[in-house]
Image (tube, rainbow, N blue to C red; front, side):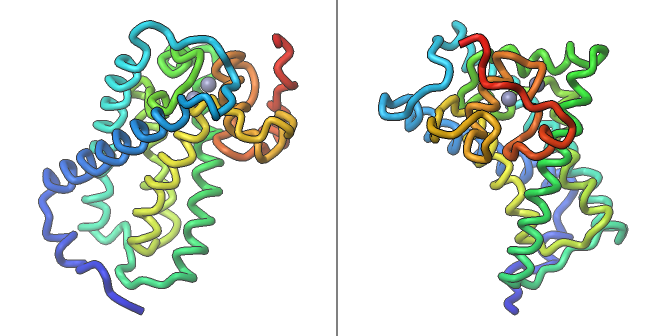
Length: 242
Ligand SMILES: [Zn+2]
Ligand SMILES: [Zn+2]
């Protein structure tokens, strides 16, 4: 077991440094992955699910809203900071591949459950007006991934501090979560039909399922997997409007 991270380095940061590091890291991650993905997926060799053009000014609006979401993720680093200092949250600084694998899987499943719950909450009638900011993107693209109203940014960003209340993670597993989240989120918003031969409710149809959700918002609330929609009977049929 190697000790990659010096615990004291992290705990000696001020809360302001912790906030700035979170915002800058998320911004770098978001802007690099979305920009690269946007230019890759717009190429003709990727089959688009929805063929309509984006709205005029859509990407500019999405980038502005995404930066607000990233600021919310920064604010959520404050309770994590004080939780770590008070001893309420504990993280392990040793590294183990088996722990990373197990905790990575746990975080992937938790992210799915948390996203589905928050997403369904925002589809309730009194709260949909906030989620409408995300559905402004009728045709999604990688820049839509974090394009939320600030209130949704806060609830979605709570994915990490909530699970930290129940389990003491290895620091590298926690660093994996934003990578998993942005990676799968960008693929989910790519509007690319990666596996056209598979039906809408197949595990391989994550991107067309979410593209269809942006077009017809009453079904398909899952993040990447089809299982929660299947369990709670919110799977949509294949696109009936085509
Ligand atoms: Zn979306
Ligand atoms: Zn939605």
